[in-house]
Length: 260
Ligand code: MF3
Ligand code: CO
Image (cartoon, rainbow, N blue to C red):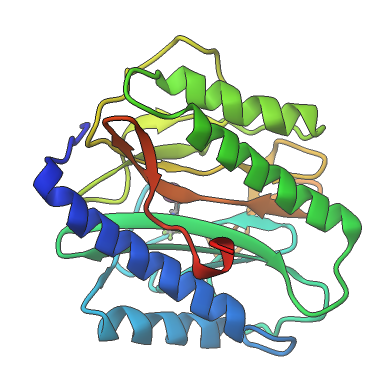
């Protein structure tokens, strides 16, 4: 199903987006070498509850995971890229961490992800990979607006990733957002311009380019949730929820740290 919000619903979508952005920024600022992934999960739970939000993850039990997720945020480290199940692990200097968070607030969802390196020992190739997903996300957002087609966004995202030299997986990608986290239309991270659903004001989309350094193949961790690169190579993921407006697209999950 594709949901189109009425203009009067947009403030609630903005509030959901601001909450997700605020939690991700707070966690990012608090994470240091030695932080346990379970601490991140607890902080997130506390912030969601304090804000009157509802986790989209804790009871989530899709076909691609084992049972309910049971946690509040995805924490994917190094070769883990999607759906990283928080577990008892202390972050080390140079770890590449992806946080992915979706929360419902007053009936509307926002979904966002950010990758960054913990501590001071960042590998240049990790920073380049993170930057490629950020540039791909920006290109997807720039291509979005009323009248644009999903294929235009997919093409914009995929072109940046391919030009940067990364293989692109098409099993998981972006999606419509609204009263639930995952809705139509699907937004693949590569595609042909001029194809697919035509965007309209009031549509919410989560765009989420993600890559693995040298493969497009995923393997599922023994925990039944965490998806890792098949080669063990490192990975990155950047995601924002956007609202299609009359004259373009508004990013609902912009973080303080990205506003300059
Ligand atoms: N928020 C993720 C996405 O970007 C989905 C995570 S599902 C979970 O679409 F159960 F793993 F949390
Ligand atoms: Co998403």
